[in-house]
Amino acid sequence: MSKVRLALYDAECALCQRTKKTVTKLDWFNKLKWASLQEYEKLDYTLSFRPIELRRELHLLVQTDKTVKVLKGFRSIRHMFLLMPSTFVLGLICYIPGVSLIGDPIYKWVAKRRHQFLKGQCHSDSCTI
Image (cartoon, rainbow, N blue to C red; front, side, top):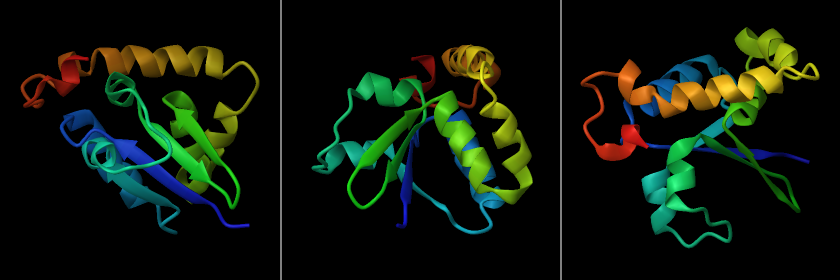
């Protein structure tokens, strides 16, 4: 059974653009596909999300033959780490029980403050969410 993994990122956010660029370089086996959430929102998909939620954290849609699993934020990054040889060990560490109790709040803290980290690099209101 093959899996299709679609990462929805905010094309108007400098941090999201950097994340996509970095992960794409590390994704030697092309396990991930990327779509801007702006384009995704225009299409008629069976899965729909509130626009504010899509902008708060990275969404990863993992589709098998019968189901689509939605991973958000830290859980999406953790899953991505397992797909790439250079981050595989880090991905395993992120799956240790209890690590998400630290990883999830850190992810949300960074995402919420991304406009502070990227001073002058965000050219839309997307980074202020």
